[in-house]
Image (cartoon, rainbow, N blue to C red; front, side, top):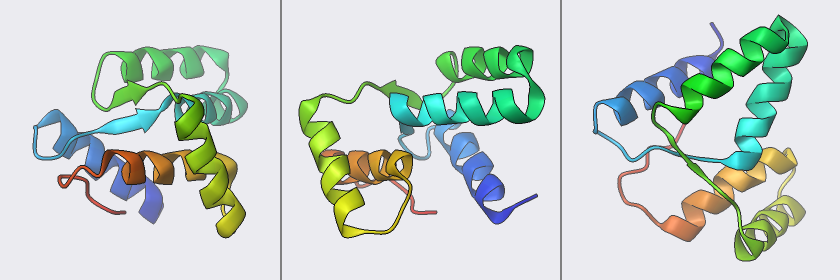
Length: 101
């Protein structure tokens, strides 16, 4: 299992237990969907989407300011655009219970 997958699984587990606040951008949900669909097919992608809608983390809809914050992060750093949304949410919310991974 990749280090990223281990970290994500740990974070979701911690969010379900209430140890951390769990949030994910709808942009990142779309990314999870298309990656799962490509690798495992549409049925598995739909099941994953259903699970995300009924289990932590909370799905956050990006508004205009969220999109601009993500764009600024993307402009300043070499990273995928979808990852910039995850970083932007952390900056905007300033939630102290976030854990980096």
